[in-house]
Length: 223
Image: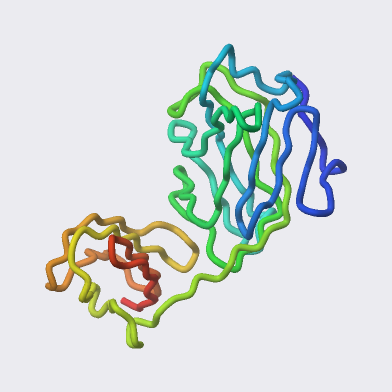
């Protein structure tokens, strides 16, 4: 099955067009994919009235300024293409600001420039009984740098000696990343005012994202 376009078809405004697929950088780090509007499914045929199929994604070291490999597990693809009646096509979003690559277990750090993202369309989240050929969506796009609070600065939350101190109470989702964007720890906790042990097993500089009903914060800390 032939590939649907070449790099020569990438357009100046961050839009790449083929008869089958249109890809566009809609904001920093965010690609929108529209597939099948021309009623051409020769790159990948999802089947009759199939509402959703999956997108396996990866970024090579050569295609990002951080020189880090990002890759999904073939058995855990977390990007979907969903049928949109308004577009009369399948539409999907690859948001590199929030996406965790499920094989390498990392995210793309803020400030990283990505030249292109490799893709394969497939029919199953946890594998495939049919799939497309390898292809890519083309940038470049540069992710915004995250606004962070130093753990010793004026912030709602601080981390000291591997423990999170926060005045916010209730259910929190906490994710700790190293400075290469790799996920170190994920926690779901019910904060009650007591310090929360992050249970870190390695030393270094980290970012902790903290989200809940009353908080959305990123804290930089050393351990």
